[in-house]
Image 1 (cartoon, rainbow, N blue to C red):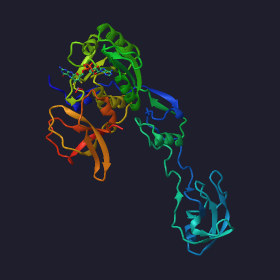
Image 2 (image 1 turned 180 degrees about the vertical axis):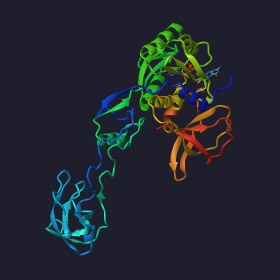
Image 3 (image 1 turned 90 degrees about the vertical axis):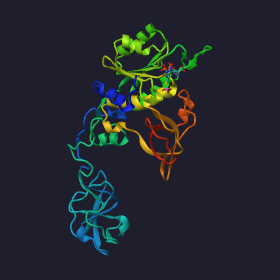
Image 4 (image 1 turned 135 degrees about the horizontal axis):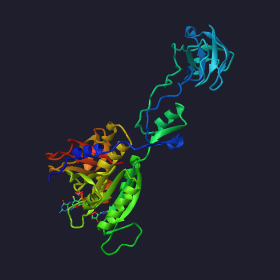
Length: 403
Ligand SMILES: Nc1nc2c(c(=O)[nH]1)N[C@H]1C(S)=C(S)[C@@H](COP(=O)(O)OP(=O)(O)OC[C@H]3O[C@@H](n4cnc5c(N)ncnc54)[C@H](O)[C@@H]3O)O[C@H]1N2
Ligand code: MOO
């Protein structure tokens, strides 16, 4: 069976998403890093009044001449405006953020005035008309829509939502991602290991990816290589109304690789199985009712690389985030020669350093997909497209940054 190219499998996976998750209303303080469910229109204008960007004097541009004396007729502070207007030859002491008095059109910063604090000042360096004046609506006006649905509420966006007057926001429900490890050899960390057993780590790796992407991980434990146990845990994922089920291991062709059959028996329609990538070849996609199914290979590095390539974009799609945010590869140059590649796109564990020539990606010598230590050391995955010619150190490449 021909291997499916990564972009084909990814597109099919994202197309299989039944739509963004529902939404919930949360107080602003609980919305950090959540995703907006609707466009957000400003409920007010910012700044609501013309104000000064500096400490100094509100003046008239017509009075700006070196040596000119001005009479200080009052003070405008942030939160306490000067009541009244200024005429020719007059100035108002003003502070950053304070409303501009009527008749003033320019700010003379105090460094450019003599006699600061007194009843008269002398212009030392004249200000240009409108200097350091912030007009009303400089930032946004009521009805503007500076934040669109799908926007992650990072620090700037959350602050902007607050400034626009919102005490609470409608955000996407976190996609629920059920994670099911499989394998007779696996033991939970901290439990005693029998002679042929190893500690199960992949669920934790995937949990970290799911949470980073804005999903909610649901650990379904470890299924034995046994149809009844697999069926019970697949049923648990459905009962929990998971948006996604990720299975780990049992994806390949061995006699104990039962996952696909168990899912098919439960009613899954298969999307793709076997992807043209290394690591991660035995990956499988499917749909079980509304639940998107991703069957990841058991090798720890394979499951994590598949997570970066497929789980992160899948969660973004479920969160209704816009398409362009899903491509993460950046240009770099190779730090060493690379051999020709076969039909599987290679994701090579690499170091990554920023140099005056740009990012330099240097692949590690050992690339076994069981070596989690190597992946933890890697700063990037260097992408070697299928059928690449041998490449020399210094040639252009693309990388996925890992941290
Ligand atoms: N004859 C062939 N054999 C294999 C092929 C193939 O095409 N033909 N593909 C290989 C590739 S590539 C991969 S990747 C692996 C993946 O196989 P499975 O998904 O069936 O994974 P398992 O056999 O269940 O496990 C592989 C390996 O990973 C360990 N493992 C499993 N789950 C966990 C976990 N939750 N935490 C930590 N480690 C885990 C497991 O003990 C095995 O050592 O198949 C190749 N074989
Ligand atoms: O594809 Mo497997 O993931 O090479 O080790």
